Image 1 (cartoon, rainbow, N blue to C red):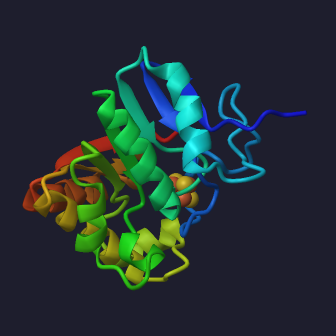
Image 2: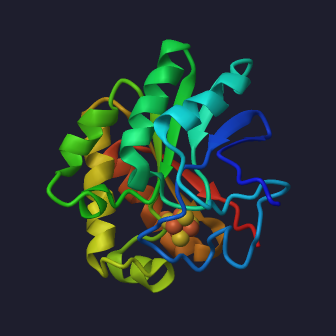
Length: 202
Ligand code: SF4
């Protein structure tokens, strides 16, 4: 039987895979058509509870850097992120959340600011997939279930994280072309966020 992976080690970091739900269906998503990521089965039979996640994390306390990222959008498991990140911060670890940033659409009834406040102090940095320089180009490749609103929601979350003292990194995949990358870098600059171009991995 394939063992589902909650916590996995890649390069010098530990990754935490909490959910397979995602509001996007990005054309470049690493999970497309894949059964696993390297040797790790990241498709989950059941989402782990906070207790199950922390029990797994206990095995990795020799490491320093932990990233919430897997075959899905971690914000769907916000309560588990909060509990696991509190545990990691009690152990003086560095924490990062990789997200599509559609926080206030995923958690309807909460503003981006309210969600950013929930993770401030326990998540050190948030890496948000900006992916494009405008809403139409974003929707064309990311296919958000929220439609054209997905892009604005992502930008609201980036701004809210920044305002709540969380380091923000906006990213774009290198296959987007020079013009989009250049415009996206200006959006990051305006927000006071770091900007990174990710390699498109097939
Ligand atoms: S937001 Fe992330 S997990 Fe969701 S489809 Fe896009 S790349 Fe995949």
